[in-house]
Picture (cartoon, rainbow, N blue to C red):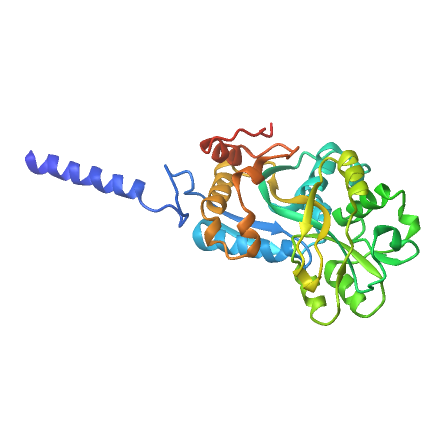
Length: 329
């Protein structure tokens, strides 16, 4: 009988060890919440932009440290990513916070598409800077862009609507410039070749495409003056003021401009535990994610000023850290 009970005890201990063993490689896992598996596709942006580079680093970190295997694809940016989630092409995506608001409420670039409830938020990642770049030292203000060939991003992109907002503050419209629709990489190549006079880009600064441009050309950044900054912030409260410091891209003076957030979103039906794993892994291990923009990761930035509801798994992680967010229904 003693041998029988000893055998039962050994079996129970073995089963307990199996149940507790392994966390899918996820750092700082607790109570099995991060012991989940998934194969996901993340939509990002053009290969010369920060979305693609940062998204790739985050995807690799998730793949190497959890069972949430993530593959990055290059896309046309924010609007294309949301539409891609809606059509089932992507599970995750990086998007501008303003564009996500347009999509969720069916305004601006999503006025014709209508409101989309296909996605929820995982968190804000880093500041996306609206950068107005030129190689012409005589272009010193937004008003100087009148009649010029100006890249405004891809058709319907977040950058296009950033351009419209800036022009509007200066009592200008798209008809006051000669708009050129190109990606980040193509626009900087066009600047290098003298095919355009200036380009709007919305990406984390420093942006790879502009850094590359600055190695072969003198780069100048167009600032927004105080009067027009006040007008933009009053009319478009999703923006915040940001200063690109002198020395960036070789510029000799600080450049004052506006910023939105790069957010990580997920399809609305993404499993709650998978979402929890992604958010927990990123924010608990921000110091181990090897990209300059990872230094901007914080729980406050991840959750403040976001109009779109969060995935329940993301909300659970933030609640564990004392932050309450709206949850998608």
